[in-house]
Image (cartoon, rainbow, N blue to C red; front, side):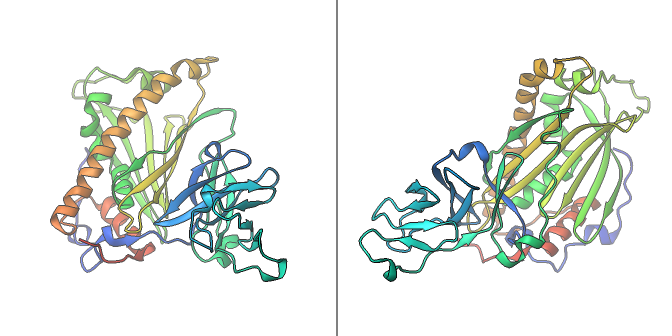
Length: 362
């Protein structure tokens, strides 16, 4: 890696801040909670955001809607219920709730005696994902939806991935932002050297740019077919073939790769959505768009190999961030000694934009 100048401020940027692993996501954003294909027409499923149980309902007509996943009667999950018209009926006594959350029918009561309903969540569907707004519903219309890679662009093919990870969401942000961890992936990618090209940051974002130099002859087939053959120059300074830009624009993260001509070759968008109330488990919702090569149908031929390659990379990342979480649990707090300025700026961003969490139960 090229020489990085580290100042005292860079290494001490988080002093006096709360333990980052106790900082919750700000709920006043649009968060994906399910893939569109997971919710069939006329069905309901249960999902979670930071411990909040949410029932997603797809009526036979009209848009998906989201309700608190409990019946106001006996607290039975509405996600176990039956969709009828524009409403969902609890599986227990048949109480029915519309998209507003209001109880619209109790089969054995008169219409004038209906009880209160349940909480409803603003809900939208885009890019093959179902989003909810778990915070203040009055803010939902003023908060923009994120740009979702190149979903729907015919010049790209997009892959979905959504694994669950047993760690606080902040570990995931750090992992992708810090490209110096490529040593972890040496079995999948061969020997490469990350070169830090610079960074930018603002009130709600941190961005880092890198290039990579290969230091051995082994290169994954999928990578070579998409980006071209990269060779070891045996100690000589390697030219910048592609620029990798990683950006956390709170609360989402992106990674894009442009070639030496400035053409966008790969575009990744990902959200790490907390599942448990303590936010120490997460589900990643990612969209990976890859530009189609000029050779017709080549992307279709290499797609299975690319899927295997990216899965293996992510599994290595998953293992190491879960080990980080286990260390935090065992030590009772964050003992990280971070020296890379970009990661310290990222940590400050996540702490500043997040919300104080509840004390961990031990």
